[in-house]
Length: 201
Image (cartoon, rainbow, N blue to C red; front, side, top):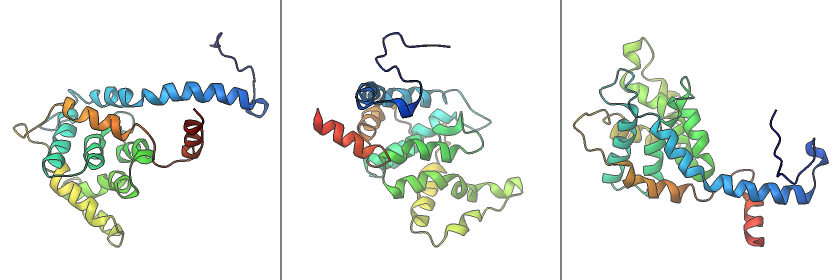
């Protein structure tokens, strides 16, 4: 068991905590949140060297997907989604799109979140039939307003980003974008509290 000897909070149950406790915790949280881009970039780097049978490793695939989106004139948030769309491969082995989408959700638009969350099913159009699966599984979402957006993401950026000779910009090209997108949440249950605390500082 580990106990923080410098922690001012002494409650053992949340229903015993005080406003002063949470002011202290909020200060610690701000420091944790400030380091989020660094942790994201470090976790993305775990894909480096992980080929999984593909022509390029998953890190290169991520960089190449983002490069294609950037070269095509997509906005910064979209490019960051392209960069991180497979970041869930390490811990979300069986549901990597959900893992990536959850990470991005507080910081991106609903449309981009949906695109990342369901890109795995849409990407399956290009290979599910080789696994005895229904390549048209994406058609269940045909009436959804983000259907075309997600199909386009896969066709233009995700699908062709397995090229050993394709242009692949270095992470330094995208790092500032990641830092800007993750600088402050756009939505989420704690956004109002963060806005209030920011205004009070």
